[in-house]
Figure 1 (cartoon, helix red, strand yellow):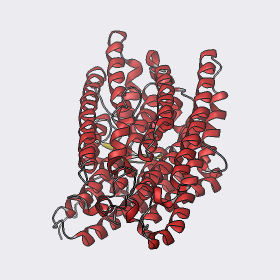
Figure 2 (spheres, one colour):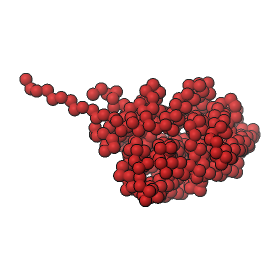
Figure 3 (cartoon, helix red, strand yellow):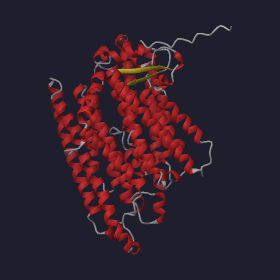
Figure 4 (cartoon, helix red, strand yellow):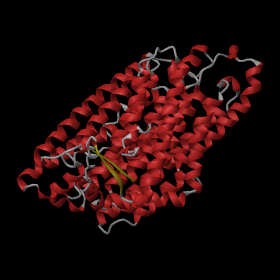
Amino acid sequence: MQLANHLDIAPIILPLVTGAFLLLFDERRHTFKSLVNIAATLGLLLIAGTLVAQADVEGSVASVYLLGNWAAPYGIVLVVDRLSAMMLLLTALLATAALVFSLARWHKAGPHFHSLFQFLLMGLNGAFLTGDLFNLFVFFEVLLAASYGLMLHGLGVTRVRFGMHYIAVNLAASMLFLIGVSLIYGVTGTLNMADLAVRIPAVPAQDRALLEAGTAILGIAFLTKAGIWPLCFWLPGAYSAAAAPVAAIFSIMTKVGVYAVLRLSPLLLGARAGDSASFGDVGLLVAGLVTMAFGTIGVLASQAMARLVSYSVLVSSGTLLAAVGMADAGVTTGALFYMVSSTLTIGALFLLVELVDRSQDPAANVLAVTMEAYGDDPEEEEIDEEVGVTLPATLAILGICFVLCGLLLSGLPPLSGFLGKFALLSAALSAGDDGAISGMAWAFFAVLIISGLFAMVAMLRVGIRTFWAPPIEGVVPRVLVVEFAPVALLLALCVVMTVKAGPVMAYVDATSQSLHSPDAYIEGVLSARQVPSPKMEVGR
């Protein structure tokens, strides 16, 4: 069999092998480990780009990989379609930027950074590729186990305290995940997503309450990981306390919960689900709106930049979950475009915060922690003329990046943040004929506009305090190219999304249509054929 036929499993195998390989070497071999990690991550980027191109050409289901050569629903399947391929590419881009940024100092701040980083990528990629619920749970646990180590990377009292909150909440969510999966399996007798979509309409009436209870519990687990209100109390503190490159890659972590809801809601509880059709949609829409409002208030109230960005994660998650709750293909199209843009923006802003808030204290340069940990009152006697000469250029570069992030977060034209929100709002106001849905659509419109306004006000306030203040009030040390380049890369990708908005919007629209019309997905998975065993040649 050709090696290209195994490309579907490569995003899982490559980081697994790389992470295990790096464990064999002493922690002091930083350069070697960095080179191996970069090579593997760039390899993932190349593979993800290839899968996106393949999915765009081949349609709803690009390929189905049967592990162990067991046909669905009895065996484990990996499914590559437009959505999973897009998430793989987004993860690889964000991982590349975070990893390059970490090479300045962060990868040396704790043990096994590179192995944990690769295991995290393995879990993320597996969650996006898997075609059954149990292996979704398995990959969730893999990525969470790696994230626990990365969350505590760099030590510090604040990081440890919020890290414990992060671990406790995610362990509880994992327990709910397992309970929900068990209930669904007990009722339907399967965990293959495509097979579930076939069996759910035929569930007897007496078992339907148990089925819906299982899906609700499973949904709570997903929504906890996505940061929905009121289950989001752990997220702002944890994300703001994490190391900058860790927080940047964590910006895709909440999107795993969003991805699971987006994947399963139209597939299992869509129009073909019988009496369970549209189960939980209104609740998801309301919870998303409340999360947007809560995150918006947090953004406006935040004085530290890291917390502002953390609350922006909640606004992004709430927006996406509310869009999923509207159960409309056009709204989903805008949501997918917005998801890519907001994830890249938040990742760039987490990296930028560390550069802007870095203290002049040498200890802070080693640990590169934020103002919240060290305070934001620099010692005037440490400011010399050399710093004063180099500071304006540094601030100018960082200021331009900050302005771009502000435009993207607030959704102001002409960048991709505006395009994503415009697509969301225009689709939401034209979705459905039901008066209740129309009223909720206007509520979504209002909250999204207000969240953009408040984000602009908050960013302006922080920008004025940071970049217009005299140097003696806030000193930014020299910024290395390896630190600035990842920020510029992520922001450049948002600019590319703006310039190439037509092809990107066409791709996400096709993705949305296939999600809301899952017949091709179901047929593609259940009809995937086993690979014939090679014929044994008879000895001469």
